[in-house]
Image (tube, rainbow, N blue to C red; front, side, top):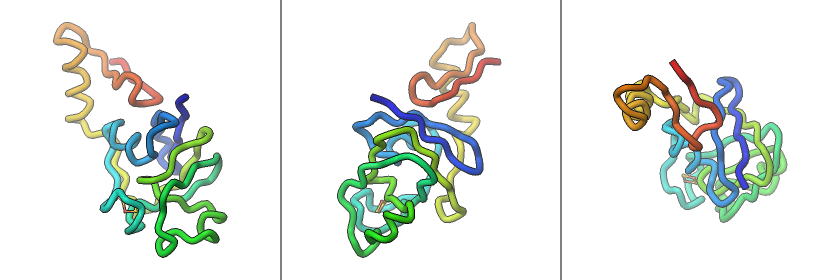
Length: 129
Ligand code: FES
């Protein structure tokens, strides 16, 4: 099963499979975001859930307390969606949408005779020009 993860305030969306982490879905979409250990131990990838439910996975209590979880914090490198999610990004997350180079690469995969930008199932949205 797949879920949509929507990012506030940018409005970007990615598709996240139920068996993958939110961070993996972001990176697969071509976007970039801050992370470090990918093991639930540093807290670099922490984000805040506005709506939806996640399985928090393995997290160090030192970087994600039960109280922080109740207030919506989650570690994107560990959390897997249990529903569609709305996630608040902060400047600390340093989220960058897919670059022009990423979209050109996606267009090249479609073929030189067509000018359709489409990242396939990796993104909740696609674009045609
Ligand atoms: S990247 Fe270190 S806890 Fe997620």
